[in-house]
Length: 211
Image (cartoon, rainbow, N blue to C red; front, side, top):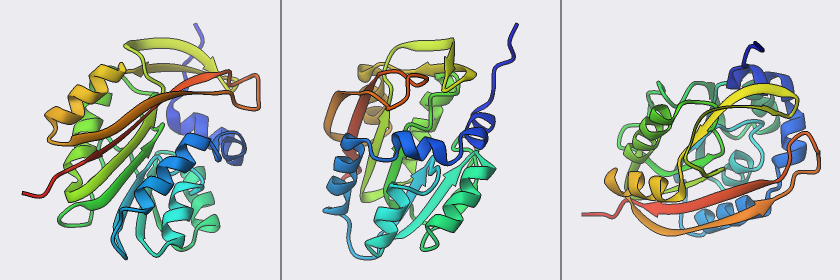
């Protein structure tokens, strides 16, 4: 039986190649424009699964915000520190990360970091990310949706086990965590590499209302 690789192993190996294929997803760029229009000056932003730092940390740090990026891949963190010196990057797992910032973040961005884990871990990660959103702040996330648990696949030449939640499961979980969903949609994306294959993407914008 082929040993399945961890997310850290996969992204350590992919490095900048991931950015080449997934660094300019049109709907992600639109999500960044949406959040940038709503953030106050000098906002505190957490980029979960920050990868090479591009495009999320680069765009928001460049706009003057205080950005922290976390990623399980040591190689990605080192690359991001070089490419985006205006942000802070830490090697950390969303499942165990403890933010240094008191009072939460004005925005939490989560673009596709939750797939190489089990369904209960995804649910817990959504709860954790929601808890880090300060009153008046936002959560913007994207994933490949589907009520999938423990599916063995090969992605970008790497054997991995993936899970996800359906669109309705995501929406319900975020609402139960105290967020108000403002917008959500799905879209199709075809990476420029047959090893990746076409994907359905789910994007969700949510907020924690002030009391």
